[in-house]
Length: 426
Ligand code: LMR
Image 1 (tube, protein in one colour):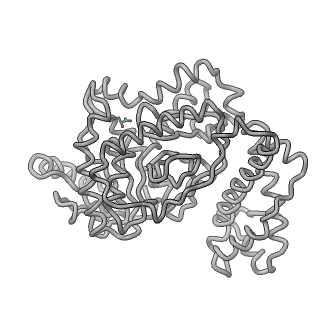
Image 2: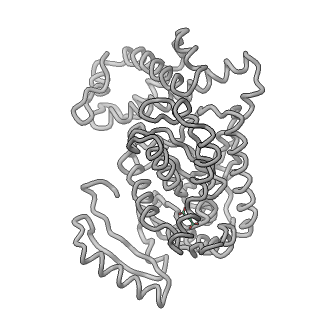
Image 3: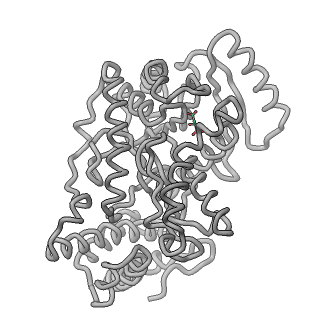
């Protein structure tokens, strides 16, 4: 989960009585598996003990949904569990602890836990939508005869529920823009509802909620966070600061990149067409309803960290030519900053003579004015694959310009190799 050399201690939490008895069995199985990286296990029925000094918390324990139950039915019962766990994390976990909420309704449980941990950064709480992304990738791979590795930029927006929006508008399949490959009738009438309702389909079949695939997704999520996800987009339910017009404070799934520094960065500037905007609004509405259903448990206030964000994506369809041009430039800048930051962080990590952030900031400052060519600008207005190409071309020009202004020592550090590969040629 945390890389092939990182030992872990599992501090396991269960309910007293029957729960603890079953946990004994789990512990025995863990011991008997002789996992080389398992450095210890503890058991407790008290979250104040189980979360002590935790670096990562996986909140999987919640009343599971049974056949015929809607996720909303779980709202109040489970929110109380997450209120208690949020407050215990606040008291005893490490300040930097990253918390992944898996128990349903995951996004709203993350909201409740984060609100009840006022001394912790709300960005350190996440709801799992990696499972939905994996499901969507699996279905596309099966339909179009490729491996899941050949699918990228598959985004899950919103709630981990049947209103989520699995968006292929920016995805690629075997290097081709998904929308040029996928049968859109199949996409809208079969694919989207199937991904949305996959959890319920599994419950109907097994009589119990997903277990192995959910565990695999939780491992993948934390692995990305700890080790990095390269340039593969990852969907995560994270706190909204108003990006894409989403109500600040909600835990809403968006695409992210993980650079392996135990954090994520949201992908900004993804263009939203009217179909997507509608779907994104539907899932946001459900999250607002869920939030209202647990209002009495939301103690803290996020206002100090959640800044309103000036977003125009949803208005794109009604924009004039001039407004659109400004928007395209703004999007390019966000994408550029993010891509550049990720690449530079990856490349200076081991050998930077200056603190890496200083170099990043210098390069970003230098890269302030976009050196558009007509070709780049035209591609920027095209489909997602064309925009991806434009961003790559644009990034190369800016990196070269910016890096040429650095000292020889800094250039050397930027050229420093990652896994033996030369990062840039100047
Ligand atoms: C899943 O997506 O498999 C579960 O979250 C479904 C559920 O409600 O338990």
